[in-house]
Image (cartoon, rainbow, N blue to C red; front, side):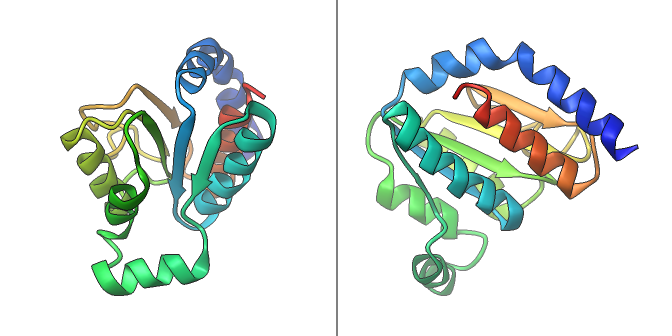
Amino acid sequence: MKIKELEIAIGEIKIYVNSLRKIIDSYKDIIIIGNGGSNSVASHIAQDYTKVLDKRAISFSDPSRLTCYINDYGRDEAYKEFIKDFAIPGTLVILISSSGNSMNIVNAATHCKKINIPMILLSGFDKDNKLNTFNGGLMKYWVDSHDYGVVEIAHTAFLHSIL
């Protein structure tokens, strides 16, 4: 079952590749944020976008900075505060949440929308999750699976598809 879910998710990526390429090409500065395994995806893709696409891409994955922001602002506000501190005009934000319901990611999306920061939203699990139903974003990519591995691999493949 998991293999079939992954095959479907990977197969759907081709629908998005040209649009994703146009969006990414339009921005020099990119912030990529996720939790847990999605944080690893964010870190990996930030490195690749910098190395291969010559983007100033960063993720919020430094343990000292991450725990500082969580301590000072709380888990649900940490990513929003990171965006406040690091997003400059013309920055694209990519937000990743396997469940689509992580409040720190949803709050970051709400902040981006409030101050007109363009974003790409990646989620999985239930189609009606908070991120997938969020009113905003340049692009959304939802993975129809409740398996973290399938969702995280599909998100990695999606973001890697333009390299």
